[in-house]
Length: 109
Image 1 (cartoon, rainbow, N blue to C red):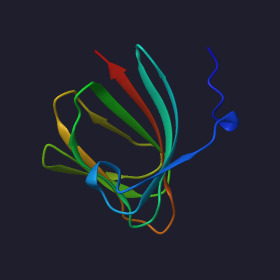
Image 2: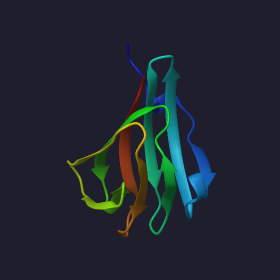
Image 3: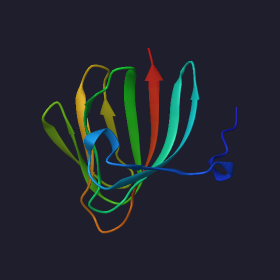
Image 4: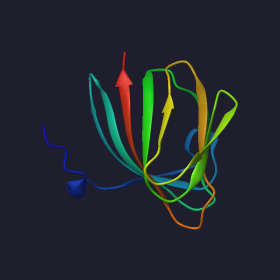
């Protein structure tokens, strides 16, 4: 199956999950999970939340930031992947001067 994010409109969220600033996203969903392309603007974050529906896999395309998963801080840069298993708590913060772009897959269980 082909998912064409180029043909989707981006949705912008203010204070996503209680975070700060703006996060823009394009999303595909079905009963197996979600595939998301997101842009976290400089100084913005996805707030701390419990990963309730499934494992969350975030591949960093561009930008820099940090993830905190169950209290452990991880530095994010292009080419690395942040993995948050179901039931864990995490946040993602853009600490750089450009958008933090992520491809995310949420595996529903």
